[in-house]
Length: 636
Image (cartoon, rainbow, N blue to C red; front, side, top):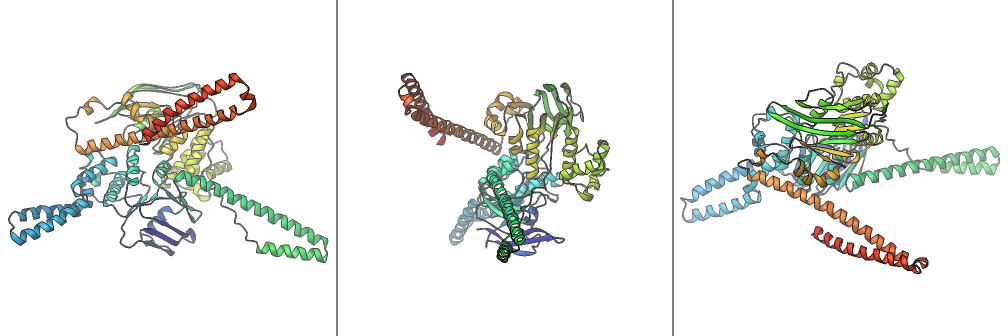
């Protein structure tokens, strides 16, 4: 065990946030802390770090162990470049390297015992230098920066010029390079693109220390963690497994707890009815029996009613009219900004009922495509057409569709004057705005609250073509799942940009990958995209010739590219292995069924049927032999 929390209590203004929280993290364990927004996740991390005092309870860190923490927001001071900021973490290695150079100079003139003593000290220092990865620290530093999405030309940028998200990435890089025994990460994927998130997954999986993560990225949690710590209604519980395993167990527990509550309530009502009946008889024996039952009820440990999940949004997306079959046609679309070409000659179309996700790295132009389609900005070239009876509903991650000077109530009432005050309040309550919350100014709301107002307006629009830009940003996991269900039940058409791979996997019927200034089409969800990415990218969006013919590529970049290629090969092999195992299982099952069929009297006496089944059995045996060999190759 490296970290333990024992009986942690925390309340704010008399309202309990965390009650009697106890859990532990083992050495090298990868665990996650989950719960709805406001459950107390970040608070618990701050208590562990000593930034916030618990009302009671204690945090225990194993003796001699180091701990590192990445908060959601970073305020790094300027005055040095990105590269130098990370290099600062390796100062002890730089000091060792400087001392080694000094000793090498001294050895040139030393003789006798002085030389012997110097050589022994030099040998010890070089060994320590090697153990600290001193000979490869520059490659390690470069690899971390590139993994987190920084290009080589970014390395020299001053930290003071960076955005909040970029500063968070620098802070994450510093933390990873410092290699503490346990890392606490609060929403580490918020400012990373898909490639960087995949890199971070791999890095954390191979990290020699323990990792404790707060994240709403369910795909990331499924890949990385083996334990979930859940905060629910002030109480903390531990679950073994990844997020999907936790989600299934939690649903079963919630169902069982509610059923136990209903059963007990039914029993209590039954006993009360019996007691009332016995007292009606007004006989001494009946009254004694009634009193006996009353005592039994008093001793009963009453099950508290499980908290209902009423802190989640309620979304119902219904188009007012049905569009034509052809919803959107885009031809030869191009866009660039000064010194930044985004994409050129894009061609695609969307049919009614499709749910299409546009994915790609940061800065490739995904949001720009949506803005062009909504006529927020013009294209440089090309055109697009909407189909018959298409009515667009637009969700903008920057929430430009909202009016900062209005209250939440006015934002709805001004756009939908047909709604009564009661209808508006009921709608806003479904999006978690109750009481005086409805009179808050839009400008004073958090990102998550603005997102909920935008989703409420989207629901009222009754549009048949939804265009969504990062709709899951700032949503907790429960709200994401509700949005997923609403989109999957939606009878219209959806085009969206998202970095949330779990969300994409659950909702997308098609993926458009914006890479190398081209769109690559994948008819399937995110898992299918991963399987086909390497193959289809090389065919439809190869790297441009100017880039491929660059005169020199650094060793670190080559190493980084090789690692990415190797990861892609491993993912493909794992997918092929799963498919092969499934095929073997199906054929073996069919082989057993044939044996059972041939044992039936009516089949055994039917020569033609026996021949047909025997032939099928022989074909299965041949196919299985091939699959067994393929499985062995893949497993190795």
